[in-house]
Image (cartoon, rainbow, N blue to C red; front, side):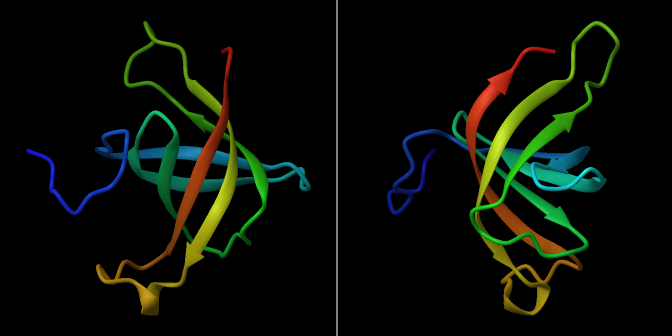
Length: 104
C-alpha cells in the first residue's frame, strides 16, 4: 500500500544492482549502485559527488543474457553526502531524472 504522504506519480521499485555511469563531460566510467528505479527516475549510490545538472548515461546490465542492458540518459537532481543521509550509507546518494531510455 502506498504511503498517503508519498506524492509521487510513479511507484519506486527498490533494487540493488551494480551499474556504470558515464558523464557527458568526461570519458571515464564510474561504478554506481542503483538503489531504486521508477518510470521517470533513478536513485543510486556512488563513491564521489556528482553535481546537480550533470548529464550522464547509465548502463545497468541484466541478470541474464536473454535481456539487453538498460541504457538511459539521466540528469542529476541532487547529490547527498553520506553524513547528511538518514540511512547513513557509505557513498553519496544521487537522485536523477530519466531523460530518455536508449536502445541497447
